[in-house]
Image 1 (cartoon, one colour):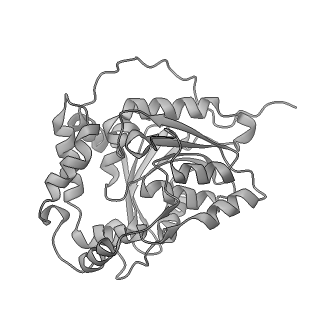
Image 2 (cartoon, one colour):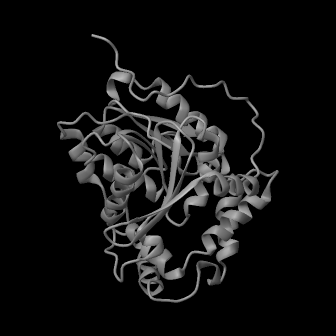
Length: 322
Protein backbone atom coordinates (compact mmCIF):
# COMPACT_ATOMS: atom_id res chain seq x y z
CA UNK A 1 0.00 0.00 0.00
CA UNK A 2 1.39 3.36 -0.97
CA UNK A 3 1.80 6.07 1.63
CA UNK A 4 -0.56 9.03 1.32
CA UNK A 5 1.08 12.42 1.63
CA UNK A 6 -1.44 14.16 3.80
CA UNK A 7 -0.81 17.87 3.73
CA UNK A 8 1.52 18.71 0.84
CA UNK A 9 3.76 20.72 3.15
CA UNK A 10 7.10 21.66 1.57
CA UNK A 11 10.33 20.49 3.12
CA UNK A 12 10.86 22.44 6.30
CA UNK A 13 13.57 25.07 6.03
CA UNK A 14 16.38 25.12 8.52
CA UNK A 15 15.66 28.22 10.61
CA UNK A 16 18.45 30.32 11.98
CA UNK A 17 19.25 29.88 15.65
CA UNK A 18 18.91 33.65 16.02
CA UNK A 19 16.35 34.88 13.48
CA UNK A 20 16.07 38.57 12.76
CA UNK A 21 13.72 40.13 15.33
CA UNK A 22 10.37 41.10 13.88
CA UNK A 23 9.19 44.70 13.92
CA UNK A 24 5.53 44.39 14.85
CA UNK A 25 4.78 47.74 13.21
CA UNK A 26 6.17 46.59 9.85
CA UNK A 27 4.56 43.16 10.13
CA UNK A 28 1.11 44.54 10.88
CA UNK A 29 1.40 47.00 8.04
CA UNK A 30 2.52 44.25 5.64
CA UNK A 31 -0.23 41.87 6.73
CA UNK A 32 -2.85 44.58 6.30
CA UNK A 33 -1.49 45.46 2.85
CA UNK A 34 -0.95 41.93 1.53
CA UNK A 35 -3.82 39.96 3.05
CA UNK A 36 -7.25 39.29 1.62
CA UNK A 37 -10.01 40.66 3.85
CA UNK A 38 -13.45 39.11 4.14
CA UNK A 39 -16.67 39.10 6.14
CA UNK A 40 -18.96 36.17 6.94
CA UNK A 41 -22.43 36.25 8.42
CA UNK A 42 -22.34 33.87 11.36
CA UNK A 43 -25.31 32.45 13.24
CA UNK A 44 -24.96 35.11 15.95
CA UNK A 45 -23.27 38.01 14.22
CA UNK A 46 -20.65 39.17 11.76
CA UNK A 47 -17.27 37.42 11.52
CA UNK A 48 -14.45 39.55 10.10
CA UNK A 49 -11.10 38.17 9.03
CA UNK A 50 -8.25 38.07 6.57
CA UNK A 51 -6.08 35.46 4.86
CA UNK A 52 -2.43 35.62 3.86
CA UNK A 53 0.01 33.17 2.31
CA UNK A 54 -0.46 29.99 0.29
CA UNK A 55 -0.55 26.29 1.07
CA UNK A 56 -2.58 24.20 3.53
CA UNK A 57 -5.02 26.19 5.65
CA UNK A 58 -3.76 27.22 9.09
CA UNK A 59 -6.59 28.74 11.15
CA UNK A 60 -5.64 30.86 14.19
CA UNK A 61 -7.96 30.95 17.23
CA UNK A 62 -7.49 34.06 19.36
CA UNK A 63 -6.79 34.23 23.10
CA UNK A 64 -9.39 35.51 25.54
CA UNK A 65 -9.01 39.24 24.90
CA UNK A 66 -6.77 39.67 21.87
CA UNK A 67 -8.01 40.24 18.34
CA UNK A 68 -6.49 38.87 15.13
CA UNK A 69 -3.54 41.26 15.33
CA UNK A 70 -2.15 39.33 18.32
CA UNK A 71 -1.58 36.36 15.99
CA UNK A 72 -0.21 38.33 13.03
CA UNK A 73 3.53 37.94 13.74
CA UNK A 74 3.38 34.14 13.80
CA UNK A 75 1.17 34.09 10.71
CA UNK A 76 3.69 36.30 8.92
CA UNK A 77 6.52 33.86 9.69
CA UNK A 78 4.45 30.93 8.36
CA UNK A 79 2.86 32.59 5.33
CA UNK A 80 5.28 31.07 2.79
CA UNK A 81 4.21 27.53 3.76
CA UNK A 82 0.59 27.94 4.79
CA UNK A 83 -2.51 29.93 4.00
CA UNK A 84 -2.88 31.65 7.36
CA UNK A 85 -6.44 32.56 8.33
CA UNK A 86 -6.93 35.19 11.04
CA UNK A 87 -10.34 36.31 12.24
CA UNK A 88 -12.35 37.91 15.02
CA UNK A 89 -15.34 35.79 16.02
CA UNK A 90 -18.82 37.26 16.23
CA UNK A 91 -18.66 37.86 19.99
CA UNK A 92 -16.01 40.56 19.39
CA UNK A 93 -18.18 42.56 17.05
CA UNK A 94 -21.83 41.86 17.72
CA UNK A 95 -22.06 40.27 21.16
CA UNK A 96 -25.28 38.64 22.22
CA UNK A 97 -27.15 40.35 25.06
CA UNK A 98 -26.40 37.35 27.27
CA UNK A 99 -23.62 34.79 27.06
CA UNK A 100 -24.05 31.69 29.18
CA UNK A 101 -21.05 31.14 31.47
CA UNK A 102 -18.64 28.42 30.39
CA UNK A 103 -19.89 27.91 26.85
CA UNK A 104 -17.71 27.99 23.74
CA UNK A 105 -20.36 26.50 21.44
CA UNK A 106 -21.01 29.73 19.53
CA UNK A 107 -17.26 30.21 18.99
CA UNK A 108 -17.02 26.68 17.57
CA UNK A 109 -19.96 27.48 15.28
CA UNK A 110 -18.06 30.55 14.05
CA UNK A 111 -15.01 28.37 13.38
CA UNK A 112 -17.01 25.93 11.26
CA UNK A 113 -18.49 28.81 9.28
CA UNK A 114 -14.99 30.17 8.60
CA UNK A 115 -13.79 26.71 7.52
CA UNK A 116 -16.77 26.29 5.19
CA UNK A 117 -16.29 29.65 3.52
CA UNK A 118 -12.51 30.06 3.47
CA UNK A 119 -10.94 26.58 3.40
CA UNK A 120 -10.77 23.70 0.96
CA UNK A 121 -10.45 20.48 2.94
CA UNK A 122 -9.40 19.77 6.54
CA UNK A 123 -7.59 22.54 8.39
CA UNK A 124 -4.82 22.87 10.95
CA UNK A 125 -5.85 24.79 14.07
CA UNK A 126 -3.55 27.01 16.15
CA UNK A 127 -5.29 28.07 19.36
CA UNK A 128 -4.09 30.04 22.38
CA UNK A 129 -5.80 30.18 25.80
CA UNK A 130 -9.53 30.46 25.16
CA UNK A 131 -8.74 29.64 21.52
CA UNK A 132 -7.30 26.31 22.67
CA UNK A 133 -10.61 25.51 24.39
CA UNK A 134 -12.45 26.33 21.16
CA UNK A 135 -10.06 24.06 19.26
CA UNK A 136 -10.46 21.20 21.73
CA UNK A 137 -14.24 21.48 21.60
CA UNK A 138 -14.15 21.52 17.79
CA UNK A 139 -11.95 18.40 17.75
CA UNK A 140 -14.69 16.50 19.58
CA UNK A 141 -16.99 17.01 16.59
CA UNK A 142 -14.44 17.37 13.80
CA UNK A 143 -15.76 14.64 11.43
CA UNK A 144 -12.48 14.79 9.46
CA UNK A 145 -12.70 18.58 9.15
CA UNK A 146 -9.51 19.06 11.20
CA UNK A 147 -6.15 17.68 10.04
CA UNK A 148 -4.16 18.62 13.16
CA UNK A 149 -4.26 21.02 16.10
CA UNK A 150 -1.64 23.01 17.99
CA UNK A 151 -3.01 24.21 21.34
CA UNK A 152 -0.95 26.59 23.49
CA UNK A 153 -1.85 26.84 27.17
CA UNK A 154 -4.72 24.34 26.76
CA UNK A 155 -7.81 24.70 28.94
CA UNK A 156 -10.13 21.88 29.96
CA UNK A 157 -11.84 23.09 33.14
CA UNK A 158 -11.89 26.59 34.62
CA UNK A 159 -13.81 28.51 37.28
CA UNK A 160 -14.06 32.16 38.22
CA UNK A 161 -13.82 33.21 41.83
CA UNK A 162 -16.87 34.81 43.41
CA UNK A 163 -15.42 38.36 43.07
CA UNK A 164 -14.44 37.68 39.44
CA UNK A 165 -17.91 36.35 38.68
CA UNK A 166 -19.48 39.46 40.20
CA UNK A 167 -17.18 41.80 38.25
CA UNK A 168 -17.82 40.08 34.92
CA UNK A 169 -21.57 40.25 35.44
CA UNK A 170 -21.43 43.97 36.22
CA UNK A 171 -18.91 44.65 33.45
CA UNK A 172 -21.16 42.96 30.88
CA UNK A 173 -23.41 46.03 30.96
CA UNK A 174 -20.92 48.87 31.40
CA UNK A 175 -19.76 51.33 28.71
CA UNK A 176 -16.15 52.20 27.99
CA UNK A 177 -13.09 50.10 27.24
CA UNK A 178 -10.80 47.86 29.25
CA UNK A 179 -8.17 50.59 29.29
CA UNK A 180 -10.57 52.77 31.32
CA UNK A 181 -10.42 50.41 34.28
CA UNK A 182 -8.24 51.73 37.13
CA UNK A 183 -4.90 49.93 37.21
CA UNK A 184 -5.47 48.10 33.90
CA UNK A 185 -2.17 49.13 32.30
CA UNK A 186 -0.04 48.45 35.38
CA UNK A 187 -1.67 45.02 35.82
CA UNK A 188 -1.02 44.09 32.18
CA UNK A 189 2.61 45.18 32.42
CA UNK A 190 3.10 43.27 35.67
CA UNK A 191 1.58 40.07 34.25
CA UNK A 192 3.21 40.10 30.81
CA UNK A 193 6.45 42.08 30.87
CA UNK A 194 8.68 39.10 31.84
CA UNK A 195 7.77 37.27 28.64
CA UNK A 196 8.31 40.07 26.12
CA UNK A 197 11.66 40.58 24.38
CA UNK A 198 13.70 43.18 26.28
CA UNK A 199 15.03 44.68 23.06
CA UNK A 200 11.56 45.82 21.99
CA UNK A 201 9.40 47.17 24.80
CA UNK A 202 7.06 48.70 22.22
CA UNK A 203 5.73 45.20 21.51
CA UNK A 204 4.48 44.99 25.09
CA UNK A 205 2.91 48.43 24.68
CA UNK A 206 1.17 47.15 21.56
CA UNK A 207 -0.27 44.18 23.49
CA UNK A 208 -1.51 46.47 26.25
CA UNK A 209 -3.11 48.89 23.77
CA UNK A 210 -4.61 46.10 21.66
CA UNK A 211 -6.24 44.53 24.72
CA UNK A 212 -7.20 47.86 26.25
CA UNK A 213 -9.15 48.89 23.15
CA UNK A 214 -11.64 46.07 23.66
CA UNK A 215 -15.04 47.34 24.89
CA UNK A 216 -15.44 46.48 28.56
CA UNK A 217 -18.81 44.79 28.10
CA UNK A 218 -17.39 42.46 25.44
CA UNK A 219 -14.32 41.64 27.53
CA UNK A 220 -16.52 40.81 30.50
CA UNK A 221 -18.87 38.64 28.48
CA UNK A 222 -15.97 36.72 26.98
CA UNK A 223 -14.36 36.28 30.40
CA UNK A 224 -17.59 34.67 31.62
CA UNK A 225 -16.80 31.77 29.28
CA UNK A 226 -14.16 30.76 31.79
CA UNK A 227 -16.76 30.32 34.50
CA UNK A 228 -17.78 26.67 34.73
CA UNK A 229 -15.93 25.80 31.53
CA UNK A 230 -15.79 21.99 31.45
CA UNK A 231 -14.62 20.09 28.37
CA UNK A 232 -14.53 16.67 30.04
CA UNK A 233 -17.36 15.51 27.78
CA UNK A 234 -15.34 16.60 24.74
CA UNK A 235 -12.42 14.47 25.92
CA UNK A 236 -14.72 11.49 26.45
CA UNK A 237 -16.09 11.88 22.93
CA UNK A 238 -12.58 12.09 21.51
CA UNK A 239 -11.62 8.92 23.38
CA UNK A 240 -14.64 6.95 22.16
CA UNK A 241 -15.09 8.42 18.66
CA UNK A 242 -15.18 6.20 15.60
CA UNK A 243 -13.19 8.89 13.77
CA UNK A 244 -9.43 8.74 14.47
CA UNK A 245 -8.38 11.79 16.44
CA UNK A 246 -6.05 14.11 14.50
CA UNK A 247 -2.54 14.67 15.86
CA UNK A 248 -2.55 17.27 18.65
CA UNK A 249 0.44 19.25 19.91
CA UNK A 250 0.04 20.74 23.38
CA UNK A 251 2.38 23.67 23.99
CA UNK A 252 2.95 24.56 27.64
CA UNK A 253 4.24 28.11 28.16
CA UNK A 254 6.74 28.51 30.97
CA UNK A 255 4.26 30.58 32.97
CA UNK A 256 1.80 27.66 33.06
CA UNK A 257 4.25 24.92 33.95
CA UNK A 258 3.92 22.88 37.10
CA UNK A 259 7.22 23.02 38.99
CA UNK A 260 7.17 19.30 39.82
CA UNK A 261 6.16 18.28 36.29
CA UNK A 262 7.51 20.97 33.93
CA UNK A 263 5.49 19.90 30.88
CA UNK A 264 2.37 18.62 32.60
CA UNK A 265 -0.36 21.00 33.68
CA UNK A 266 -3.62 19.48 34.90
CA UNK A 267 -5.29 20.19 31.56
CA UNK A 268 -2.40 18.63 29.67
CA UNK A 269 -2.58 15.52 31.85
CA UNK A 270 -6.30 15.22 31.21
CA UNK A 271 -5.88 15.51 27.45
CA UNK A 272 -3.02 13.01 27.35
CA UNK A 273 -5.03 10.48 29.35
CA UNK A 274 -7.84 10.58 26.79
CA UNK A 275 -6.12 11.23 23.46
CA UNK A 276 -3.39 8.90 22.23
CA UNK A 277 -2.47 11.23 19.36
CA UNK A 278 -1.53 14.11 21.68
CA UNK A 279 2.07 15.11 22.41
CA UNK A 280 3.61 17.87 24.53
CA UNK A 281 6.26 20.54 24.02
CA UNK A 282 7.25 23.33 26.37
CA UNK A 283 8.19 26.82 25.26
CA UNK A 284 10.73 28.02 27.82
CA UNK A 285 10.78 31.75 28.51
CA UNK A 286 7.37 32.17 26.92
CA UNK A 287 4.21 33.40 28.61
CA UNK A 288 0.59 33.09 27.52
CA UNK A 289 0.98 35.24 24.37
CA UNK A 290 3.57 33.15 22.51
CA UNK A 291 2.21 34.16 19.10
CA UNK A 292 3.28 37.72 19.88
CA UNK A 293 6.31 37.27 22.15
CA UNK A 294 8.07 34.32 20.44
CA UNK A 295 6.72 33.99 16.89
CA UNK A 296 9.84 32.36 15.39
CA UNK A 297 10.10 29.71 18.09
CA UNK A 298 6.38 28.97 17.97
CA UNK A 299 6.48 28.73 14.16
CA UNK A 300 9.39 26.29 14.41
CA UNK A 301 7.35 24.07 16.74
CA UNK A 302 4.42 24.18 14.31
CA UNK A 303 6.60 23.25 11.34
CA UNK A 304 8.39 20.46 13.17
CA UNK A 305 5.18 18.97 14.54
CA UNK A 306 3.41 18.95 11.19
CA UNK A 307 6.41 17.52 9.32
CA UNK A 308 7.07 14.82 11.88
CA UNK A 309 3.43 13.74 12.33
CA UNK A 310 2.79 10.29 10.88
CA UNK A 311 1.20 10.92 7.46
CA UNK A 312 -1.05 7.89 7.89
CA UNK A 313 -2.69 9.61 10.88
CA UNK A 314 -3.47 12.78 8.91
CA UNK A 315 -6.47 12.91 6.56
CA UNK A 316 -5.70 14.04 2.98
CA UNK A 317 -5.62 17.80 2.75
CA UNK A 318 -5.77 19.75 -0.47
CA UNK A 319 -4.09 23.12 -0.73
CA UNK A 320 -6.80 25.78 -0.81
CA UNK A 321 -6.92 28.34 -3.54
CA UNK A 322 -5.74 31.85 -2.95
